[in-house]
Length: 341
Image 1 (tube, rainbow, N blue to C red):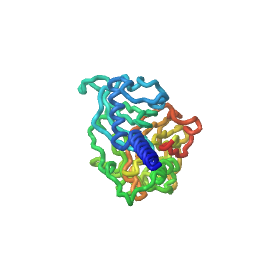
Image 2: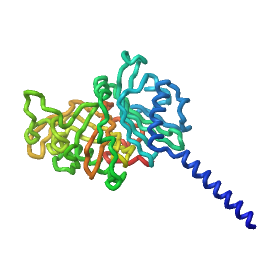
Image 3: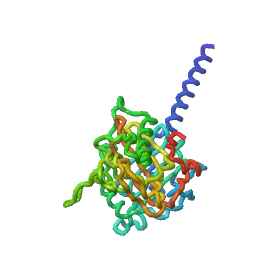
Image 4: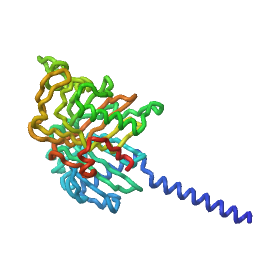
């Protein structure tokens, strides 16, 4: 009986070790997830879907359109660019990326740079979801390609100061809600050093051109990229961003304090361009025709404040859907935490 018990115990230990090994094999850490992005781009460059471990039901969208794997960017991407920014969500098995690529020609001198935002979902070492937007703005891509990632976006938040996934998303969404509300009185959780880059250009705290006077947020009738994050929102001059919808937070890096989102900014045009600021200034601003921005935007949040904002964006058909939401979800301005779905 004693020998039988020892054999049973040994078998149990071996079974536990086997289960732990299988779990380790299925777990994808930061390096693993970021490696999947490189493997993905290598496969796209070669236009070889067979080079990737794809789930049988893998889903792929580009610029909001569901496509067959091997179509779209797979036909045109020729090389990776220099700019690489990851938002890696190990618990969710998701990784988001903003960077530069080259299209059209394998010779870099003859190729065309573009911006790309990609989200991959990795389950059991296979890719089950691929979502990307490709911003084909050559000048913006050149600017971003020459940039280095801001140190704050790479800095690890001390363990004791880290915010939860829910808190990071909540604070980040206050940016969208405050911009849409546009009453100059919202909750604006901006740190004093908050800065925003859009398509590689500074859209806050930009230097005042020589010979010009910095606009005064209290009297101006158009908001300015020379203002701070707080000044822009407090001015009440962003009324033309009528609706910010399909706010999908798709990756959260708690270690670095970053939340990554896809969203749409709607500008209806017409009479919505005409409004009165909270202090009585009458303003007409924004696109004349209905206009939607499709964007990927990330937020660095620490101590409950937004420090860094980075986005790439492009014009899309007005009212467009992401391809990952129902029509009702896509038209809603409510935030959605889809990181763990």
